[in-house]
Image: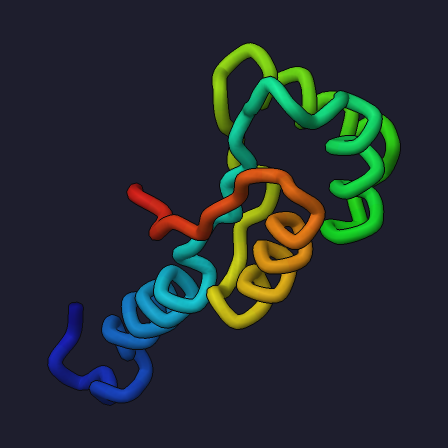
Length: 102
């Protein structure tokens, strides 16, 4: 690096600040939990209507939920996920919002 180069051309802090802001805003996940009450069809229909999943995506999520016990069906900011979580739990399906651990 030359000392003749203007300091403002490098700006090493910009990408770090952007990365941190992005991480903070999308640092939440919507978890849907398995149970012995709700049918696959009901969970699939809910994911399509509430989370805007495609049929195929909703079916895959339902299978993962069934076999693993839970699955993060959506990642995003808290304000976006909260109404989705409420809509899912209003349908009798267990759902929570958890901080995304990196």
